[in-house]
Image (cartoon, rainbow, N blue to C red; front, side):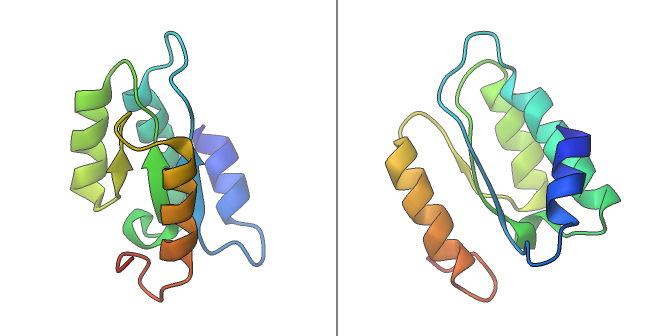
Length: 101
């Protein structure tokens, strides 16, 4: 996740990233969050300004929320559908700071 995130956000024209997944068996959302955050930081990006939404309910969700909260990244759990998370990501990507919608 770290290297993929770094590669994605380093591409020209990529200003925002949405991490949206359904519940996947044994996928640790906290480990995904750590990798995404580390990739952002290594790419010189501010996670709070670059990640439009992070939706990955499942194992490690409580720790995932703590990690993302620490970096100011919006987290969605299973209470937010994939379609709703995608709409949030689009709305946040269209605002200058990414957090108003």
